[in-house]
Image 1 (cartoon, rainbow, N blue to C red):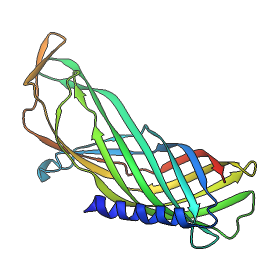
Image 2: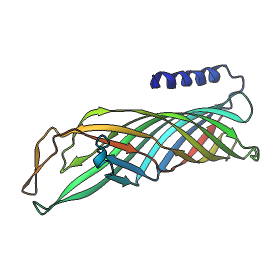
Image 3: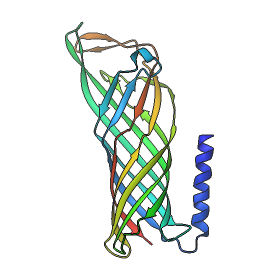
Image 4: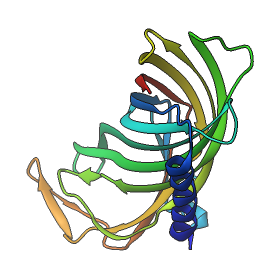
Amino acid sequence: MRRLLFTGFILWGLQSFVFADDLHLRISLKGSYTTSTRFIYNVDRPMLFDQERIISSNLGYGADVSWKIMWERFYLGVSYEAIQGKEDSYLYSSDTDVRIPTTEGFDLKLIELTGYYIVPISSEDIQFYMGGGFGLYDGNRNSSIAGIKPATVESSNNIGIHVLTGIVYSITNSIGLRGEIKFRDPHFDVTEKYERAFVDHAGFRIYLNQNPTKTRVNLYGINYMVGIVYQI
């Protein structure tokens, strides 16, 4: 149902794009940085729900297209973004007195539909805007213990909303620079299970949890974006 609803809005936007008399099309290539991603472990077991980890290095890239619709100051846009985060660390085993290397990370694909309003204080060279919309989020968790990765049993996608504000500076009539701050709260749940019972590391045998565990990956930080714009 969520995918059908999102597809319906995309088709509505494309219909407006096709039949508009004066598109004022904008195509952007962008890079992004999200300040914080939270990994919440054992979300299906309330007694252990407070276990979590924060990753602050979350880099992304993407593109979007927007076009004028309805009236002079309103644009509708569709964007795609891919975000990745990864952090290496160690677990200390008191039984073996060794450090066990671990990896925690994710990759997330986002498709968002956004309405943009050009603020009246804007000029021909500098345009301030604000906006909001919703998106479809589909992600994977990338984790390992001593180089062994668990198998994914189940993964869910999610739909969420976002709000944003930004600025476009026109260098020429066709080329501009763009900066944007976006607030959103995308998350997805992943259930995983180790298919191996143990792994040998540094001469010791480390036993792996054989029970399925559910982890929530939540990009709750602020999203900063910079990019280049081609304007038609």
